[in-house]
Image 1 (spheres, rainbow, N blue to C red):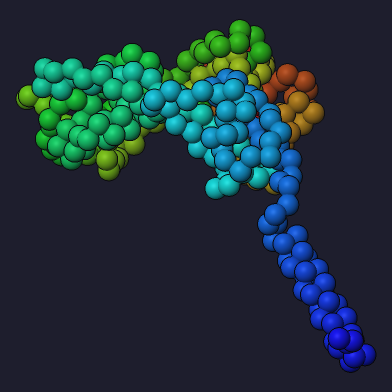
Image 2 (cartoon, rainbow, N blue to C red; image 1 turned 180 degrees about the horizontal axis):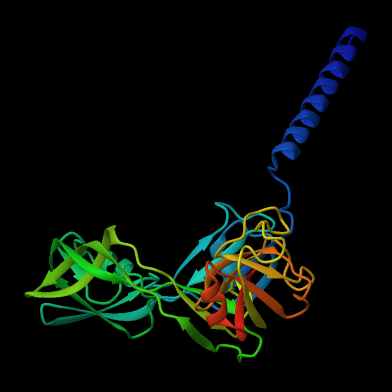
Length: 324
């Protein structure tokens, strides 16, 4: 039987459609990654201090570890930076270590990848509201360590305690690094601290500070330090004299326009800038607000309230604590 021209044309069109359909399916397959060879992926594996970088085509992290020649023991774990294997992924292996938990006179050894003591206690199934480790819960877990878990109750108590003296420090280049020399003792303050105590078998095994209320403020001390860090100024040895506000022109007005009085000192501005705040032992805090014709270099003039004070002070060498 001879086929008509129409039948031949129809068959040719059908073949074309089939070819187009196959091509479309191929495009979809390529687009969604089905049926194609996997691409190379670089994965970094951390096993303790060991780092390995591997190139893989695997879609399983377990296979990646196998390719890296990393063997997992029964209790070891690993975590990954992504849910599936992709280029740039990271695998971190956590090795389990033996830890012994002692509770109620019984010891039990378990293998754990927990990083803290409290994590091990929680993993072992202890109720943290009733049982706690004697050791610091945030202590890092080490191989073979013992953790002692005991039943406990808690109570809140208020304690009054001293506040350590704060020392204002000035740098003294004549001191050695690490050396601290107290110039003026401070006084401690007092505070009331709310403490939560954890009691086991009638003994306080732990205590944590809560709210703190200052009852009395102390006064800071003054010290010289051989370290620049943490200082608020520097110490300079100077030759000091004393003057009365009416000295000079008798008006008692300083070079900076302020009225002279106790707490005003005259300086050489090239040595101590005008406006600087200073401290002189046995005189007190002062402001460098004045100058004087004879006050040159390491000279300083302290203003006194009376002529008698000026006479008694005379002239002497002093240490001047200059704020930065």
